[in-house]
Structures are given as C-alpha cells and as structure tokens.
Amino acid sequence: MSDYKNIDKRRTANPGDRITNEKTIEEKSKQLAVDSPDITGDHIQVPTYFIVEDEEGHQEALHHVKDAEEISDVIRQARTDDDGNRQWW
Image (cartoon, rainbow, N blue to C red; front, top):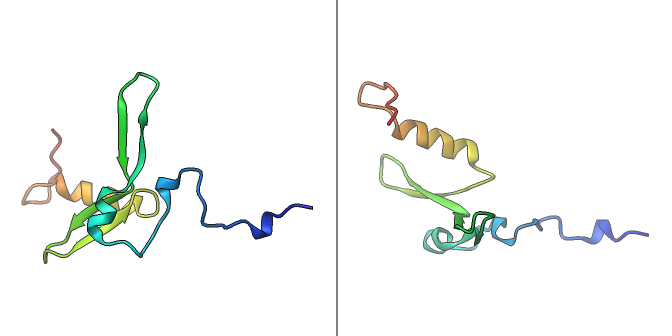
C-alpha cells in the first residue's frame, strides 16, 4: 500500500520553489529557484521571489509561480508612459 497520503504536500520538485512566510523580504530576495548551468553551458539563476514596491513605497515579495499573474501586471505597468500608452523597447 502507498504512503502517498503521508507525504508532505508542500514539497516541490525544486526545493527553491518552496513558499514560506517565515522569511524576511531581504531573505526572500536572495532565495533562488534555479541556480545551475543550462544545456548551452550558461549559468542560469532565477529568483524565487521578485521584490516589488508599490506607489506608497511598501515592498512585497511575489513568488515566481504563485504570483506570476501579478508579476506580469507589474511588468506591464512598468512599460507604460505617463499617458498609459504601452512603450516597447
């Protein structure tokens, strides 16, 4: 019989993907989801959390998987001019 029900369901294939609320923003900003060479030999580093700052200056740590849609929204906002027109460069 399988012990599937006893397995910690918070485990991920990649330990760097683990979501935690116990770390400070500074600690989260240093956590890497991926830190290894790729097939071309380039060394790839992907942060687990992206630190964003709102208009009032409050920082928030967005998880690269769980908060991907919000991260995309932040990127889209960063690429607009004062009139709200998208800028591509």
